[in-house]
Length: 219
Image (cartoon, rainbow, N blue to C red; front, side, top):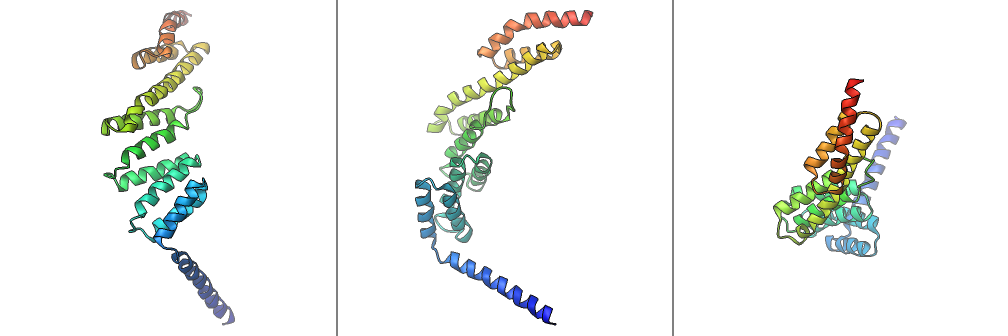
């Protein structure tokens, strides 16, 4: 009986603490939380900004500041270089507010979040492909937007990275005696990335690689 009484008291105590915490947090108005988030963001205290904006979004979902909070949470993750979280937050914003005027900015930020994760040509090329897809989408959906006008240069950099990766793999195949695989890669580069330095290099290597492939067949 004493154990049961203790457990009941414990449940009420924990519940009371939770209610107290909820009440304490609710003491702040949406305006105060928006100001807190803005101040923290301006001071580059991005984790504090995320907390303030998250509280605002959770406690005042119908506030006029709620949409701003959603966007600034994504921006704060971006500034913290937490790109996966930033991408998820931006994508959620676009999904929830597809007609919002900030959508071109959001698409661009998703692209930049992928772009900033691009690595050397010997590493996973997925970020470059995803970044390019977002920049192309931006140009297609909002061709007159200021961000879309900067997209071609970013796409060129993505293409350079992707073509560089393909050339790296092709050369590796050629070096390790997988001539048919190398030849297909070289031809792929020439066909899909014309005008690039990698395309020119691939074109120059195709005759040598083809000869090696033919010789390998005879052995």
